[in-house]
Image (cartoon, rainbow, N blue to C red):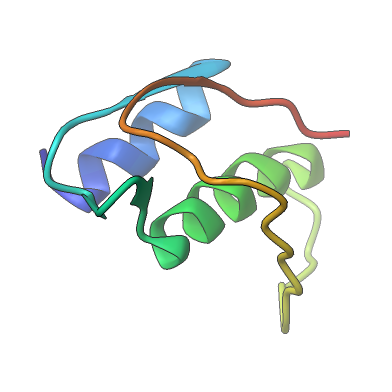
Length: 73
C-alpha cells in the first residue's frame, strides 16, 4: 500500500489498517505514525485557513502493524 492510500483512508475512517512492511522490529516507523496522527487532527480544522507549522509527537509505546483506532479532539 502506498502512503497516499494509507493517509487518504485516515480521512474517511476512524480506524486504519497498516500493512506489513511499514515498520522495523516491533513497531511502525515513527514518521508514519506522526503523519497519520497529524492527518487525523487536521480533520478537526475542516476548511479553516490554518496551516500546521510544527508538531511535537511523543511516543509512549510502540504501534504495531494491523488495525489501529484513531481519535482526535
